[in-house]
Length: 115
Image 1 (cartoon, rainbow, N blue to C red):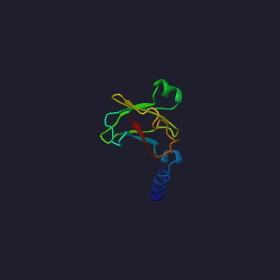
Image 2: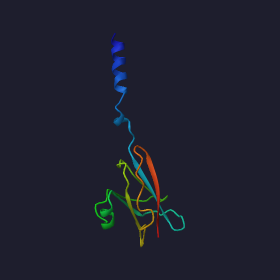
Image 3: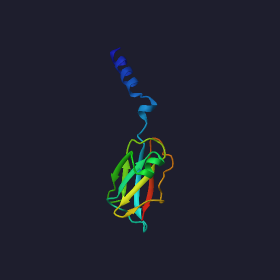
Image 4: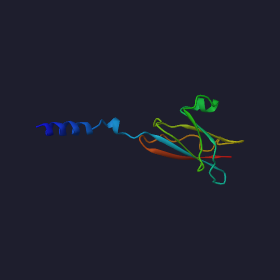
């Protein structure tokens, strides 16, 4: 009887709600230059609205790219984001500035070009 009760408790604890099982939504941005080379050390900010993006104010987060030109923003909302990428005197203005709506619980990947 105790074994059945213990098994029932363990089994019930293994079922989680759908919300608890969802994976976090992530956004990976790869920054490349006009020749297609990865840009290491670029500053990448994401914004959840166009007004903040245009004013360069209130970014959701800012990260620096790795040697493969990538940054990964974790636990983001599944919405569209505006991307601001800068490196030295280059930026991505007009080049891949807004993402599509992100797929929830997935690693969403986009590229942006700086020139």
